[in-house]
Length: 536
Ligand code: FAD
Image 1 (cartoon, rainbow, N blue to C red):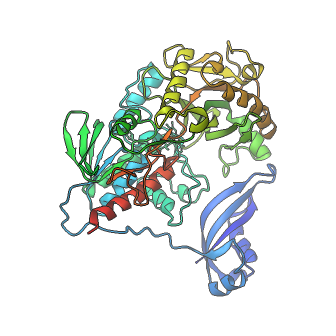
Image 2 (image 1 turned 30 degrees about the vertical axis):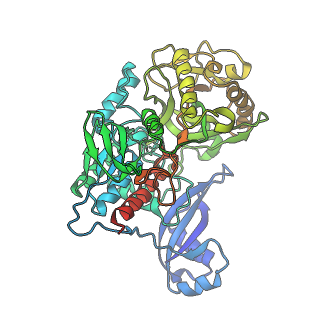
Image 3 (image 1 turned 60 degrees about the vertical axis):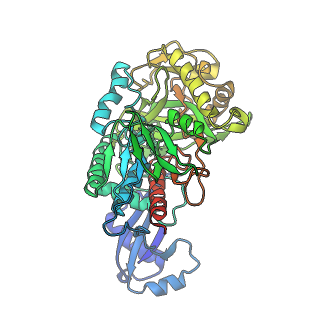
């Protein structure tokens, strides 16, 4: 097979136009194209009234060698790569060793667990939260009744932080082994729609993610893996050489473990504090803070797709924006959720955090996106590995207070923020955050340089997307959990720099940002654990 990318056809092309377009692009007669499959499909909306669908296709030709030789210098034509996943090792027949333990059942822990189980190592997966159906009730408890369960919420429990999300499944990590493809294929096996395999920007949405993580749990259990819910790891125990010996659990028991995957996510603050006390090598890393901004989805569709808005092949429009400000800061859109809602995403009492989610249909009224400013340890929190957490807590506390101390989020109209006055009422854009939004002044809950950067960036964005800086667009704060504020640094063997057989992984360890990259990292770490366990 030969892979051809960058094949553009008009939005409304007939289905039978693809084969002739392939033949024309490759310079062969139509009869030479024996068949093809669509590997990816995206769109090019730079000219919004002449939108193109852009295909990557795998083509079966009568004389592939001739075409590859003739088009050797063409970067869009190459042999289809082998994307088959092959685990590097297997547990020896009848293996009875000490089982590896995975802390965290988010995408990283799930994939680490799945791959270890498939390799025959019968992992134990522990998570401080509950199984996903019970967790859903607790999560809704905050959204509907302002009742937070610190162990079971948007951040903690089966499926991890991405369960109540937009379920976007793309990332920019280099992936020469096609591990991202492996993740998508496992998701499809677990019940995801198979369009995630060929959409250029696939997404799943919340409800489907819930059933998928249940299905993955059954697979891991059938392979001999085991889950322990409501099992918080409170401490690690090391031997004299600082090697892993085991885990002290919340209920006072001890779980012996000499290979531990630490996939605790970016909100595992008590766990980070414990690791710091235990001398595990940590370092502060950059992340971003800001707000969620909401507009009617119809405004975004119109601005991005013009007359083609609502076309079934395009779906709800997304956007990605970025602006470098005169104060040296960069404002950018983050985790944009078309047709979704803003959600309460705190895991700690007395704090307010925003994030975004959607369903597969992306049919809700508003578009929302993080609008955030990049910050870094040298400039903004020079106080050591845990200083980023302190900074997050400071602004989350301020947001709780500004919202009314009842988990309502502080909100401000874009027009008021630009004019430097507090909001006292909302306008035509109805914010979706529950339990509610309190109109106020966001400068009470974000650093001055962030507000200043927003004031510069919003009008710039308004020139790129009409009505982006509409005076009645709403901003709700604060978005502080954009990525981990620290890194649990690991070496080439993926073990902690100074704590052998502890494998920091995923977003919390600073090695992923999002569902797909966390899952890919889970696979890599599972392989590293397996290699270490089987090494002579
Ligand atoms: P997590 O998913 O955070 O999982 C960590 C797990 O560890 C949790 O289940 C937690 O309970 C457990 N844990 C923590 N401490 C302990 C302990 N001491 N003992 C036992 N268990 C512990 N990403 C995307 O790519 N696309 C999106 O559309 C998207 N939308 C999002 C929407 C929301 C509302 C949120 C909150 C996040 C979203 N993300 C999205 C980010 C994505 O969810 C994360 O990047 C991803 O979940 C990180 O995976 P992880 O496995 O590394 O950690």
